[in-house]
Image (cartoon, rainbow, N blue to C red; front, top):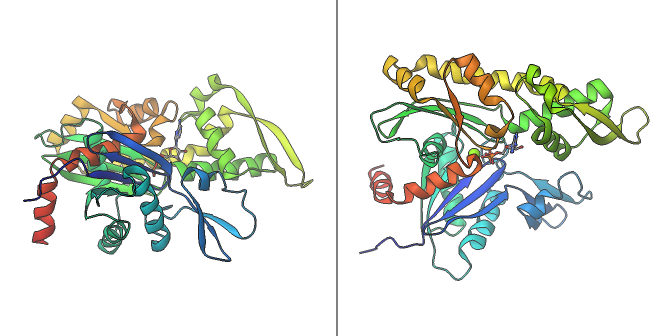
Length: 338
Ligand code: ADP
Ligand code: MG
């Protein structure tokens, strides 16, 4: 009989980052979910970090693609190539094919889920199973997902925010909205263009969000200002301006409000028992967006529930997929019965 060795891997195929957990080792890979392609030859020229560094800097013939950008596979072949590259990097070329537990953002259709399993198999998996993102995030955050206790997890990634309440090993209520890190970056670009006539790139917007971004206009003042560079839309020339954390807080306000609404709506849908558990135990934030300054304060204030950031929020989902590998028999049985 096949016994499950240390060859299983868990993949968090995120819209911004892919993280891989190798059984017996832990997190072995964290790279941006980006592929750079030469459009004239259709050849892949870089994957992951190398490809990300090319965003906004590519010559006409090279395209940096984020194949999972909005939480769905936009380009099947590119996603497969990317996964193959990451799996090889994580487990080595010569190793026998791994069993893979793969996690994708919530809200996907059955067809999209099938496509991800197919991409994982094409990328070199021996067998592949899907785990829902909020569930993996909750496991990785150390929440008691199998207990008869309600937990609430909010995963804020690049393309999507997944909100879910979980109890007894299942998702009780959930929501996926396309308001997360990328939307914040876009809103920052838009705001700075309108207010300062300055065009900045995606990478600059993301960096300024990470450095100065704050969920509350009132609390933003203490984070001061920074200089950013872009192209002046009037003169067409490069220009440096000073912007404040208050500017950034105003720019991302709408996204924050969207996330708060999703949390409130999900809470309103849950049974009184689960609500009571969530009030007792608090809401746990995972994903890169959980690191936004003062988000816990704003969310706790508006939902009237305590809010915490999980430890290692960027890796929770991958850790959760790795933990789920221990119960792979259950996933095998489920797949057989389908
Ligand atoms: P995904 O699971 O969709 O790949 P991640 O959980 O890896 O996404 O989170 C990536 C997002 O988190 C990006 O939009 C990134 O800009 C954002 N992020 C990372 N660190 C911070 C931070 N300190 N403050 C605010 N946002 C952050
Ligand atoms: Mg994620």
